[in-house]
Length: 400
Image (cartoon, rainbow, N blue to C red; front, side, top):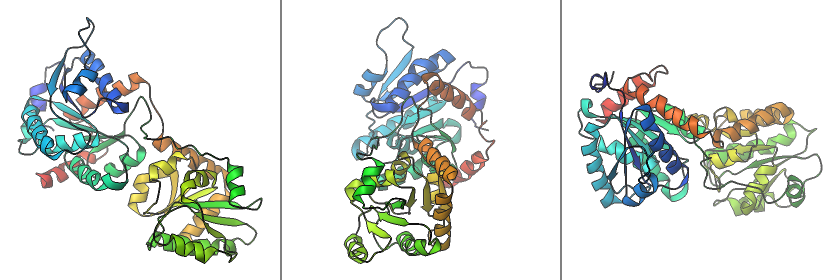
């Protein structure tokens, strides 16, 4: 039971602080909905953000405008070392007078987690963090650090996609899919060519099954297993014509192009710039731990059945949207591909599950209702039915 619970007994509402790094996009819209709606539930609402963010989020002087306290803190959506230090200190001083802090965004969530440092347990508010879709590339290391801070100190993580929920679920916080008024995606991936056009460009004979993979073309266990399985696909089902197309990039790309050229193999290296088209046209997509060009969430956007090579990380990312096999199990890869090709129902269900894990939106009243349910529940310690509170308690004892 949280130590703050006693001080809240008999009160009609909670003191809720929204920490917001940017006003635009879907997360700014969630913050706006919460700020305008939560006072109706009896909660005392405050918003912390830069002056520009506060101007965007907090209503002007309307007669029906909710009573919201504005707190100017230089919060940003991305790391800014010097300003971040000041922001953490200001948040730290605010927290003892707050029951629930809702951080909107990964970086702001990490700053709020850091601001808990040094506070006695009785003075720590419950921390709710909405984690957006994770970027790849240069920002990934920073995001991993932020993710570790959040997993240790957050009470609730609301993930924009099921793969984010899966990532945090095994690390302590209570996790749920965030209900959002619009889909969280930087870009909707739309193929430029039809399935028929892609097959014609790849010179596939009629009736050939296309298996495509965006695996990084480097010396990795996943690629080794995939190539070995691909060589045996034709022999495992001699009655079936199959082509495996690799869309990734990496140091082995030219080597593989030369290896496959003119040898009549059921493998090819496809144009990396056409990865979205080729994967969208595939009958089955095979992923590995190390990908190139597209990440797991982007691949699931394409609504294709997936065989995912990997361990627990693959399960966290893909869940029921993919057939998960060990990255070194060639026989399991062969079996998974053949069984999906044999079963159109499984392919269809897998494709739909993939899309639903990363795309989708909810009505505004559902977005608000989720938060109105979670805030009191986390303060009262009512989110332990899934066993995650115990895991969180253990992690927090190590974190502090």
